[in-house]
Image 1: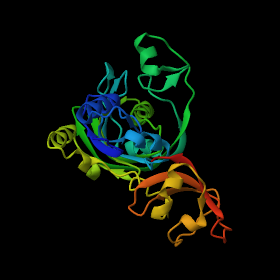
Image 2: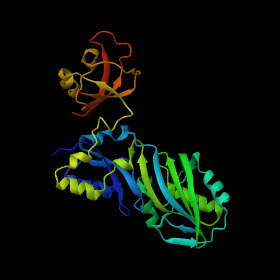
Image 3: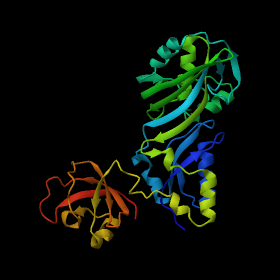
Image 4: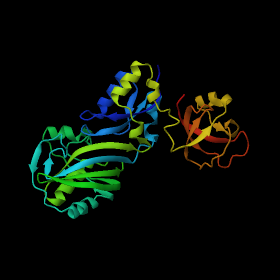
Length: 310
């Protein structure tokens, strides 16, 4: 069975994103599997997998921003900024709720952020976590990130610590662990990310997600295709161009798309924008750039494919 499309997986805790890829390869026997954005081992929730020919679509899928639910514990600091690392110190959090809220408010909007020393961020081609394990200290440049939403849901006190529940929506490459650490630095008591669940990655939500156990069961019953989102349906961010049945072969050969080949033109397209080209059964044929805003003759070229998927 050849699989082509997108699978949304609900990652369990304490495995890596690559472990999820390997698990799906084993379940599906499909070797061409990738993912659209890592999730820390401690975290759970949405990982978007691309399977088969759809691996070529990774950069065009609407996987940002990413939304998380989680908890940050103030009054403890670890070397990894989460519960996976060694505890460096503990200190009572004496800050008031208002002071805690004020500290978190500093991490909304667009700002520069340093990644955690134990992270997959690469310096000179080497992940930081590998350098950290060797005890090597390297200079890392801060990266501009955006926090679109940060809602504090609850602050509760336990044994001298303040446990902050939150919902956050962030741009690609934002480290929630770094926010936990930096808030702890501001308040002087240390901060650590103690739980994190990704509930949304752009268009893809936790409601679409399959657990690995559920995927394995579906595969054993010959129903794994039910978990596959068709490529054409996974690109709601792109306008659709429908090609008539008799011209599918031309698109498959990478030939320019002429006005006569298109079934209906109900949508207004902008010159240069990327469109998804589908057949009359909504099968994704290619991604193309629209060129036909001035086309009138049936033979005029209206789009040129740059990524053929059939």
